Length: 156
Length: 156
DNA sequence: TATTGTTATACTCTATAACTATA
DNA sequence: TATAGTTATAGAGTATAACAATA
Image (tube, rainbow over all chains, first blue to last red; front, side):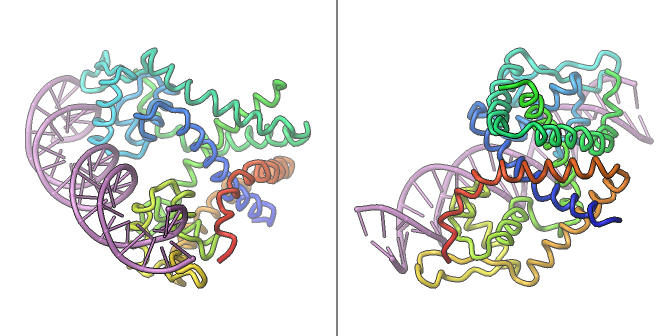
């Protein structure tokens, strides 16, 4: 393992949480007051994986099935997501965002993205390109393991 | 605001949480079973800001003062951090890691860093350089606002 | 009188255990 | 018999309110 690899790993471990802190803070600032962070993450996940089941969600968000079930209860009762039975396997549940859920999610996401864009608007083009390339590479690297757990979600 | 800035902001918002998820998962995997994530974050913060006060911590971690106080109770009782009175302002508290606290922190951090380094070990040198540069730039960008809240911590 | 931190109390969130329904 | 999800109950974590000590 060369030195640059270790240095880079160190930098990633150091900087990524810093950025994440800002993203979280902004999201928190903008989201409707009565949505918790796990609920927000849940909505974001369902947005990316329409029709996800409860089990898949609980694995991804890191909650137990009962806790996830209760969290979903809250979102359903506020009409932010819809919960219907899976068409072929009636044990399963099929979750998706309502229109209102989409709106809530966007209302939090967009100002955050705008904030970050403004922050970066003074950067030299070379720096922007480096960031863009870095993000592409890192996405490849960190996506694989993340998608494994979604196999069960492939069929709806 | 040019298009590349917005694209890059989008990528950052998309990829950073993905990486963060991996970091969190690894940390969780390795840390002593009876330390919560907020406790872990607290220890990491104290490591970076030796002698931090309770108020500074609660602001940074995002807990109220009473909650922070209780969390610290738990860490002190397990001999992971030490809590002494500030030398000049005796209302304040002066927090630092114990030797054991350092060990616990490292025991969680190091395997995570190693994991990430291994993940990146196959990358082309150009990609590594792009990541390194991106991290430098992003650090500058996201550090400023973060350090503001630490002014009160400067003097011990 | 303002600031720093702690104690008391209540509530929310999450987990484990037991259960129901479907495959 | 195994899997997906829900309900019941208990414990941990966090907040608000009231308080103590120092500046």
